[in-house]
Image (tube, rainbow, N blue to C red):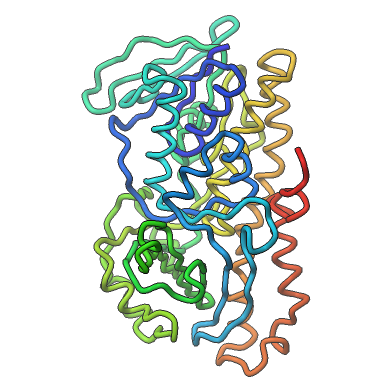
Length: 413
């Protein structure tokens, strides 16, 4: 069987590795000619790290990133709301890994080139169109840089892992329109700082307006420093619209620094963190509505092409990796490609739709907004504002929805 994987991002590369491990001939087509370590930080949750471990990719990633130990929540005054243990510290058999997104992609690309062989990776090939052809698919590409047509490629199945602006998805739903924006803007960057809190902590502070930060580099940690990924989020009038979101669009700190000028906490000076960033990237927080179908004939969707979601709960990349595992297993075990794609979609589409909708309600991070609504001027006793049982239920519920509750992850395969 020959699989055409459209997109060399995290989901596409892991899909190719999973397919290769299952004995399927996987080819990756990436629009960008050269994959470079662009972007900022990302989190891989234990349920997807378990799958990466099965592919032999966990240890290389731990040499790059940080095994996160806790997620800590504060209000905008720096008062502690809740601490949620993470990864190994929470009893999982696998860690949560916080890592630079670009370094993760480059590492996965290196592994894919080694295992699939370089001739299975096609950089600079941008999908123009595809169609069913008998018992397979035919895909047509152009060189992204020059516009020159590439040779036609035939395969048995086509997997659209080409992100939120997916060409494959657009071919299925040409009238869908732009991604949905809720008015939230996120400014993201990485800044070298002193270690803070436990040194392996991820924290969120605020309410309606937030800032999240966490370390993402083992190399910095090894020399007593922290390469700190941070994201400042606030809301503006969504009726003004937004430009097409792009992780590589530069932002200006003058557009948001005044909002955080008084956010100086004992563990981290937020204005200093923002000012020291070498570069800042602007990103509107967007998603898309869940689809009624991912699969049409011998083509299907995966990752952000299938279920783009708000960046809450650390679940975007993790769900793409799970998609890849389920898809490979389905193609291996089902009776025929069409049956395999139906089994994959029947498993993954309802689960990811639930996460998309849950994230629209704020994910587990909504506790900072709830706390601000109940105690806008701060509190003396968090138990009187948000009882421990309520907080625990919010986090336990989200872990169950996103399939990374402790029992499920640690359960033997």
